[in-house]
Length: 137
Image 1 (cartoon, one colour):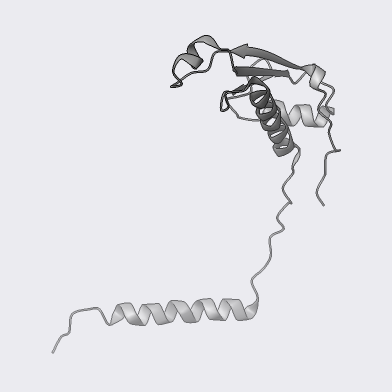
Image 2: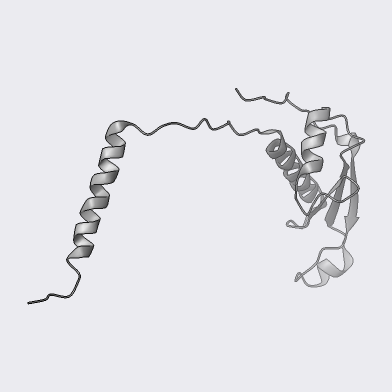
């Protein structure tokens, strides 16, 4: 049985937004307008359930710092508002991925027919390979 974590709600007051200048090509606009965004989310200080906090802190993701802060840089769009929405969506996606627990696999035994089919395939393949040898008179 899988242990599902409760549904989470992301409180936007716990997210810190810092406007920065975007990198890369973009002409004069990129040099004078701060449209990119650094989104910072402190996992330990958040109102998320404790089990979800532990899973987020255990993630081996470069966006999670050693201090337990998620840092996401959003600079895809030219609008600060759209970058803010995109950063929040990526944060929600990261938290949802940590909240998802895969089903536990129960080992099963192959059926008798499956075992026979496997062995028949192996013998057939062995016969094909035996025919590849040198022909001796």
